[in-house]
Image 1: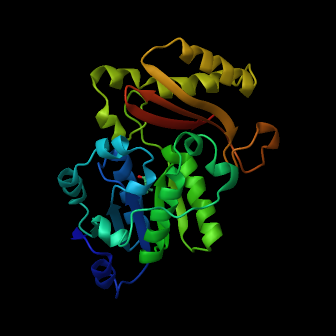
Image 2: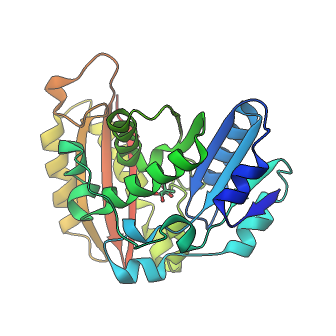
Length: 278
Ligand code: PAF
């Protein structure tokens, strides 16, 4: 493992590289889900960069940014076993030399619903940093987890808009034994909240069962009524949509799946998850 804090030095080190380059962008606080992306990238590329950078422009809320878990020492320890990986740990000036603001993009409906609705400017921030990383390193492949499914579609749309030639590899969500999707934010949950957090996975499973007998709008209604009776959990959204363009199911295209999406606040911790229903 080689660590770099400047992208210029890292690109220099990679100048005479042979074979493909895979990029795994992360915000650190690495867990098994991230490591599965790194392992896949190593299998599929001769060279791999893992970036660790908590991108301030994708946080719409200062306290969320301040509380975002960081554990660089532990992250580097976890990456140590991959001896041929380049780790990019920039400080803010390396990526935002002038000012820490995001560019403005238009992702249409994709950027306006769910995460786009409840986290203003979030996807502008994500797209800004991902576009920077893609332009700096020009990877052949980039690896992202399906837990952030909407982010995946946003990044695919960004590639189209900017004609960037990176192949996006989406990787399945990795779950804890009790079904909770792995997320750096899980570290912020206290013991009680951690127990409660399995409600996201359980709700997605329930929606999958209900698809046998009910239509999506009824399922959405049943689930939101159920949540209105549970204290300690704030349901931000629960939606059943096609997973190619986030449309109504009557517009389902042959390559798309029906997918349920959920976001909750448990205490002060914002968690999201999604699952293919059929
Ligand atoms: O998914 C994440 O961890 C972040 O949104 C990403 C893609 C690394 C951009 O900061």
